[in-house]
Amino acid sequence: RFGENLTIKVELYNVATGNLMGSFTGNFKDIYSSLALIDEKATDLFRKMLVEPKAPEPSPEVAPPTAPQPVPVADSAAIANIQTLIKKGVEKNKVKIQKESINLSNSDKMALYEENKKESTLGYIALNVLPGFGLGSYIYGDIRSGITLSVLEVVGWCILLDNGVAIARLTPYDKVDEFQVKLISYTVIISSRLVGLFTPSGYKNIYNKTLREALNFHDKVSYSIDPLIIPRDGAPAVGLAFNVRY
Image (cartoon, rainbow, N blue to C red):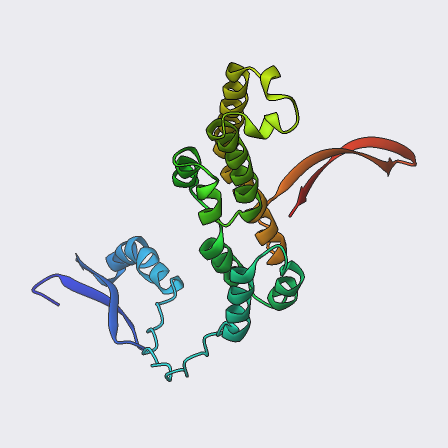
């Protein structure tokens, strides 16, 4: 009571946490006048009880340290054996390399392929052209092409330097024109140089393909759309199938 008036103050607490959820106050002449104020304010105040208070978050627990997981170790012995076989020759040791690499992971096979594959051929092409004699092919590891180019070069130069002696042994020398001899010799030499332009690239493609097959490493993916016949509602229906091969 305050003088001739009455004062009311209502507070709503959450007894679990001690927090004040809401309150309202009012003044009126008599107790009966308080009903209108309570009807107006109480509904909004007590509606807050329907909202569940957020439970306090549990304190974070520190997880016990986990033991370090063992890192898978590549089969170093197999990799070393494969490297040795590759150096000795991929083509002649292809079957042995396949047996050694069958249990290796794809990442190990990829690393072996990247380390041993043939790459740029420009320098070897230049050596085949100048000085020639298949020098670039020999250095690149293509002994077969190197021998072929060397034989062509030697034959051409022998014809040119011996002034047709090689041809004169087969035909009477007086019937052999000097211009024809030089034309033949230059044709053989130039042909050897032209062939030397392409042999390194062809050898690189064959070598890398053989290396992939020896390592059981298939890095190519192919796609195709094929017709498909399937039963539908008791009758055959035609569709399309998208296939991925790797």
